[in-house]
Structure formats: C-alpha cells, structure tokens
Amino acid sequence: MPFDDLRQWIAALDRAGELKRIQTEADPILEIAEITDRVSKSRDAKGSRGGPALLFQNLKGHPGSQLLINQFGSEARMKLAVGVNSFGEIADRIRIFMDVKSPQGFLDKLKMLPLLAEAGKFFPRTVSTGPCKEIIQRDNFSLLDLPILQCWPKDGGRFITLPCVTTRDPNSGKRNLGMYRMQVYDERTTGMHWQRQKVAAEHARERMRAAVEGKSAAVDIMARSSGGSVLAEGDRPSGKMEVAVAIGTDPAVTFSAIVPAPPEIEEYLIAGFLRGAPVDLVKCETVDLEVPASSELVLEGYVNLDELRSEGPFGDHTGFYSLEDLYPVFHVTCVTHRKDPIYATTIVGKPPQEDAYMGKAVERIFLPLMKLTIPELVDINLPIEGVFHNLMIVSIKKSYPGQARKVMNAIWSLGQAMFTKCVVVVDEDVDVQDLGDVTLKVLNHIDPERDIQYTLGPVDSLDHASRLPNYGSKMGIDATRKWASEGFTRPWPDEIVMDSKTKALVDRKWKTLAKELGIG
Image 1: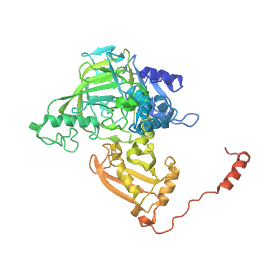
Image 2: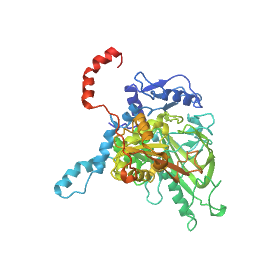
Image 3: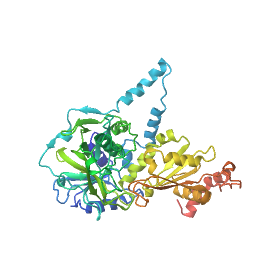
Image 4: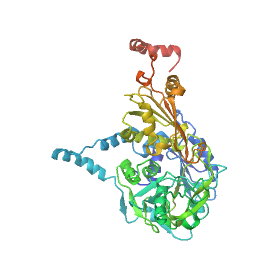
C-alpha cells in the first residue's frame, strides 16, 4: 500500500522499529547534524549501517516543532519507502513496460488492456484542496520560524536540504520536480542552487532566451566563471519565473525528486509508478503550479531572471565544502502548511550518509533503463565512497574489440552519468559489487599506458579539482581481458579456481571441520 503522506510513513517506520523519537533538546544549528552524522555511521547488532530514522521533538528555539531526518538512511528503510523487498522488483516492473510491443491483432490488444489499466493509475491528478492548505499565510510569515539546519561550521548559513522544487517548462508546459538546496538569506528569500545542467536551470534559460529575443542564446543564469550575467547590463532579461517548494512529502515523491528522469517524463508520474497509485496535486495560491496535496509545508514564490546572489559555502556529499558562488534568488510570496507541520530535512557530508542509500536505490532501479542504451551492460556499481559522480564500475558482455571504450563513451553521453569522473569496465564474470574482486581483476588486467584513456567534457559542479568550474577531464579504464584482435598477442592466463569435485568433497566435511577449527 502506498503512503499517502509523511505521517503515514512515520507511523510505518515506527511499527517497523526503524524510528527513534528524540526528547533531549537539540539545536538545529550544527548539533542535529552532528547527532545524525554519528547515527548514520553507526552499525546495529547485525552489523548493518545507517542507524534509525530520527524524529526530534524538542528543538532549541522552536518549541512545539518536530523535525524528521535520516528517513532513508538504510537499505531496509529505502526498500520500505518504495514498498518492495528487493529493488529488483521495481526493475522487473520497468522491464515489463519496456518490453511492450505494438499489438499485432485483436488478441494482442486484449492482452495489453490490464497493462494499460495499471499504467493509468500512475498519472497525477489535481484535487480541489488538501492537508497542505490547512494554514495559508500570505503575510506575517518568516522562514526563520522553521527549524532549518545549519549542518557544518563553515556553511554559509542555514539550508533547506530536502525540498521538492517544482518548475514548469515554458515551451511544453510540463512540470519538473527537482531537489536543490536552498540557503536561507532572511525571512522571505533563499538561494536556489540550480546547477547549470539541471532541468530547472534550463527552464530559467528558456525564459531568458525569450526575454532577450534576438540576443545571444548562450544565456547562463549561473554565470559562474564570469562574475555576473553573461549579457551586458542593458541586455539582461527581466521577468519572473514561478517556483513552488514542497517540504515533507510522502517518501515516493521525495525519492522521485532526485531520480535522473528523462526531461520528457514527469517525476510525479515516476512517484505514481513507485506508489502504484496517483499523486494528488493541489493548485498553489499565488503561482500557477501544483504541489502534492499532502505536503507538510509549501513555499510559493518566484526567481527574478536577472538576479544572482552569492550562495555557499556548503558542506556537501563529496566530504568537502562546495565553494561560494552566484545563484538565483527565490522570493517567497506565500506559505501554506498543515497544522503543526513536521519539518523534513537531511544532511550530507562524508559518506555514508542518508543520500548514499537513496543513490544506491537509483542505481538498482534504473539499471534496466541504462541497458536500453547500453545493451551489453551486465551490472553497475556506484561505490558510496565514490559519491556517485566520481566512480562507476561496469561489467559488460564483451563481443568485439574496443567494446569497453564504446561503453565508456556511451556512459559519458547518458544524462547525469555524463558527470562520471572515472569509468572502470570489466568482464561479465567480475562481480562489480565485490570491490575486492574488482580491485584484484582491474589491477591485474591493465597495462596503464594501453588501457587508460582520457577525455574532456562537462563535470559535476561540485568537482573542486577540475581545471574550470563544470568543465574538466575524465578517465576510462578498460580492465577487460585483451584479445588478439585488440593487438594483444601474449597468452592470457587462467584464473585460479578449485575444481568442482574437490570443492564438493570439502563442502560435505565443512560443518565438522568448522567446529574443529572454531570458525563460522
């Protein structure tokens, strides 16, 4: 059953023994982040990492408020959030829809009816009102009344870290749901961390192009390396872009806001797919956008197309501070919320943190979609310590010479995967989830000069080592077995593997031997 709202989700976490209520007073400034960081890196009696979800109920400076954090901070909770025992269940559902062929006759059409009926349940629906409208504040509100975290000592201030940000494509009218950190400047303004390659940033650029018709199409509201707008003062675009921010949504919606969905697929549709039920949306009060009706809190407002402000530093998931830079400013025009809203948030920093488990879920669920573009792909691993854009290990079914390099280039042309700094390609018999096996095989299989290639292209905005912001080099390592058709004429040695007869013999004796040896 889908969770209708954050409160149902909290109740489910409680029933599953995955939630701890914290009555000890805790300060949103630094202290909650330190507590959560320790919890997220702890292990339970079974050795599993992540600790429980935390519901802080005694917040310093915010009497009566509650704050939820680490809700996705373990593999078990991430599976519970999307209602599966294995992420493979969702991947299998995706495969079913991808395998649908055009019906060839009447019987084929009849067979498709149940699938079409199920797909019809995924689309969001607009309702007249919802819990997020219990309190409507057009005036007399302040963002400083919310228990917004400052996570790390050198952060530029307090940041909203788990917002579901809705914008609209000015050409197609399609909504986009993304998650972008928001630095709180004062009672009614925040930063909007729209990195250049994000969909919301493209929506803003499209509006800017329309506003400066006949001018350069290379408008860039981030203007990171130029110290301001790329246009001359008199040519800068004017106008506003409407934005709505939902905080405290049901887990499927929150998760959908981070998935690397193709621009033509709306995230609310993905949430409906994960939930098996549509997301109910409600019209905002002051902007022409829709938000989840069951949200705990909604911020409505706009960004000015010609306004940038310094944002950051911010302690990021790389384990380092992302540096201060120029970003758009979000002006809040209205706040709507439930009575006694629960503030949902997260922290990022040195892994593992809550975002690591969200990222691993994305890896597992969207592997079938990657295989559409790269059919020889067997499996992938984005190690948590590689913070997802620094390292991707992929195994392939190799069929022709040079195929590993073809796969590298395919990954670098694939959506958010284009930011991957290092791609390592191994043969299909290497378990990419076993980093010990990967290390053994890769370092044995490569001749560095021959098997490592470099290329230039876009890199993640958080990459502090690149030669320029957003632009730098990437490395691919071909760790597959080398063939004669690839110019390798030496014999390739066999891997050391015990024969099956001897293994079976020892298997039969192992229980007795283990007792004698005192090992498990």
